[in-house]
Image (cartoon, rainbow, N blue to C red; front, side):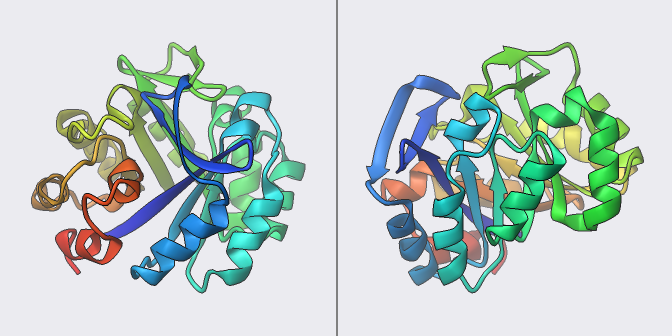
Length: 244
């Protein structure tokens, strides 16, 4: 499994939201590139960048920051936030993203996602942000009737191979991962021959050990944000906890 340090960008700063709430934001770095450099110096094997302004407004707003980060990173950079049409996806890839994460567009236009997956293959990832067992979209501000498992099965059948799963209730809390929800979705991913990247609630190395010990064949990575920003452990230690 790969540990993905998170860089969430809002108003030009690296921030973290509590439970997806834009009103409960903590700013950590004035320049997102400073966060990227720190994680790279600590041994990051990949980076997960989210354009929070883009997620809320429906179109990319921080691609220049993505470009700056990607130009210095010698590891894959995964980017999401506001990527709701083919033009936005192309712009993110041209800015240096190795993979792009689609959220709202995946539910609103599954045919578009299928076309993008056909054009770009495994560079297309879908984010499954869940609140109370249902997928949340538009920057986590609108709930839908779809469940993560239903959405995963549908989009895997359309060619998507990787999904990022975030239970919003635990995101940014440091209170531990949503193990039961993850295990249930991991079984669905296994059946669909898809991979999962988990995000949400990681506060300690023991949390990472717990995810590793689940031995979920479809779990390929874990995104960590606040715990790294607050120095609870370093990137290399987190990666070692996931299995080296």
